Amino acid sequence: MLIPHDTRIALDTVVDLMNTAAQGDREDTLTDLDALGVFVREHRISGVGDLDAEDLRAVREVRDRFAAVFSAPDARIAAPLINQLVAAAGTTPQLTDHDGYDWHVHYFAPGASVADHLAADCGMALAFIVVSGERERLRRCEAPDCGRAFVDLSRNRSRRYCDSRTCGNRLHVAAYRARRKEAAG
Image (cartoon, rainbow, N blue to C red):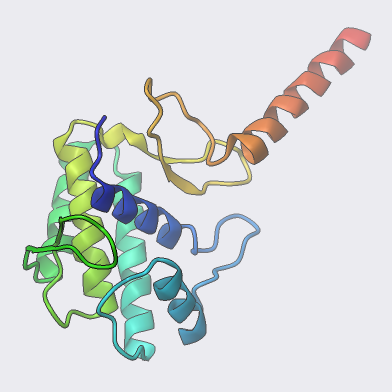
């Protein structure tokens, strides 16, 4: 599956945004303006001015709406959710080549809020996944105590864990130990 760099960046951003939410025993990490500012800087979200409490509230709402897309059982459910996100953001597609990136499309309107920026660009990246017939690649980690979001970009769509070195390895080791214990009687 060939994914343009701007779509890949937007997919990584939406996954990282969703993974700021409380999950299991992990607390929400997007709780104040400082955290939002760090998120904006780390993800190099361009064209964002001063952030305020309304930005934080709106970004958290967009995060919840992305979570609903990932939870959708199929494309027929996910598509209207994505359409609502993108439409509410007031998309204005425009070609750009900023910050050393080659030509790509931004979908947010000039001067858009950070929430609209995320809804437009990340929403369009999710739309690309649906249009490609790859909605099942939007997943949650299968580790019982995790649930983090990820996009399965493996060739055969077989990825089950957010990180095979942590969640996957932990579960494989636990299964191995259980088999050894059972064999030892």
